Image (cartoon, rainbow, N blue to C red):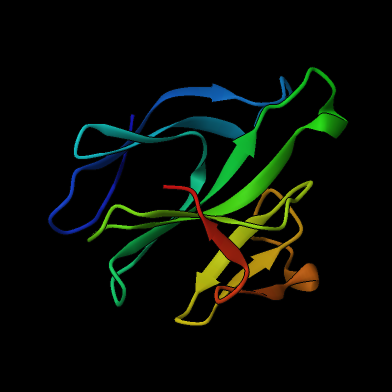
Length: 131
């Protein structure tokens, strides 16, 4: 179990398992105050934004048995309203490096070490409500 430090909420990721049997990425169930929020949460890429009381994370969508059928999305949870949002765009791989009021800074990788593919993904218009 992994605990994400946030004030006023108990945020954990449990039921952790690897996506690709080659050492990761690792996913789990994201729970807020003991309520399941999302499955497929990438365990090492959850950021808490204290300015807007929200979590942002990468979610793995295991749609089919072939890797080409599966994808990742950026997801936001507003901790005040518990509303959830998901990126319109799907990614083959993505890692969140930073979040601001207007955009999510991402790289095309499973880690944040190589910033050569860094770009900004706009929050306004780039997400849809899923709850």
